[in-house]
Image (cartoon, one colour):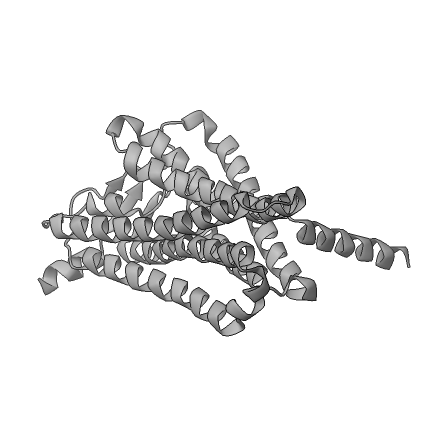
Length: 315
């Protein structure tokens, strides 16, 4: 067993990436580079904006800043290798490098999933218990909820990584993907991977079910509360506080369910890769835009920041 693990440590994975589109390698590189750059600037910019504006020091923006941080980390884990595959002849990655990419990518995905659930609970308290919002969503509780999301993401990722490390790997190591996805790594295993597949299925099902359950219950109660509000102005305000978050949830969980419940046939491998790009790069790029365009406080903060820069340059 020790010899097999030593051999696995020196195993090399070879990614096919988007090799089925040879004439589009450079255009795809430019498109993905633009998306990645926009994602980094938007998420880091939103984090900075929340940090420097006291008006945004509320639980909702605290959670949003961590969601932006997780989005930035996840994209940074995936995008550099994807860009390298599009312009480099060397399509290989070491076993250790692949495991590290999977670990951090998995941690970000699980953390992001539960961060959205935490934000749904925050919206529930804001709409259904507005007078108790400040007390209910205390700094201590917010810190615990965020820390819990990170810790659970690390636990899930560590568990899945362990079940990858106990396997032995052989063969060509060719992966028809651009990143170290769990099932793609398992495809190169020589030993029996049925237990690893079962563990992955259980963890993924549990995480998706729990996070969606929290979101569904929160928004069901919000909906029941909102339809009882007699004032149209109050109704509109309540809905506007949830619109951005609901849009982000639809993008995130919609792509997850599409990837793992629909796109499983070999005939749709290109579609799977496109959907993975959308989830790992496009969604993190869209989240700051969604929250900025539909959020009055963020738009006002951006406007003030731009106004201050213009004034400083004029002097």
